[in-house]
Amino acid sequence: MTTPDYEIEKAALAQGYLRIAGVDEVGRGPLAGPVVAAAVILNPADMPVGLNDSKKLSAKRRAALDTALRGCAEFAVAEASVAEIDEHNILRASHLAMERAVAALDPPPDYLLIDGNMIPRGLAIPAQAVVKGDAHSVSIAAASILAKNWRDQLMVDLAQQHPGYGWETNAGYPSKQHKDALRNLGVTPHHRVSFKPVHNMLYQE
Image (tube, rainbow, N blue to C red):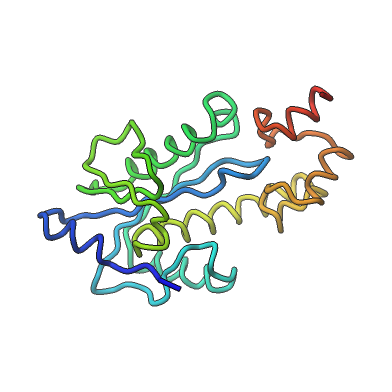
């Protein structure tokens, strides 16, 4: 199994870029909650050991790396709301969250490594799209960890306001418990109405 490294960042440094940010988002698939993105500039002389795609890490390991990153990296986390997901679409909302995370870095980065195969249209900084970026670039992996921890905690908080949907464990993804609760408890203001299971619940199609 390959793990992410700093090689893509080194190539950008060799081109003269100095502040290279990895950018990733989490939360495209859930039926509820915002989509969250993070932008991270790592210090190659002080990087946590074990950075990897957040989906490949245990919750305990993610939490430890999240704490470590907050102590040694420059980062920003941003969201796009459920309303924005429903108004635009999940892809555009994901890109909005990415654009906001990049804009919140101060001073700004001068080069971006974007997870995926598209560069958000609102970014004016030179950027490179990296397919499966969180498996190749430690900067993108770091962004995936910060974004996932942020969003998971957000969904735990929302679960206390809306018990029964299991958001504290499913993070809003369409688990059996979540889909059963949608049928039994109905739709909350945090559900994405544009997503088919929620839409069908509301309009009983």
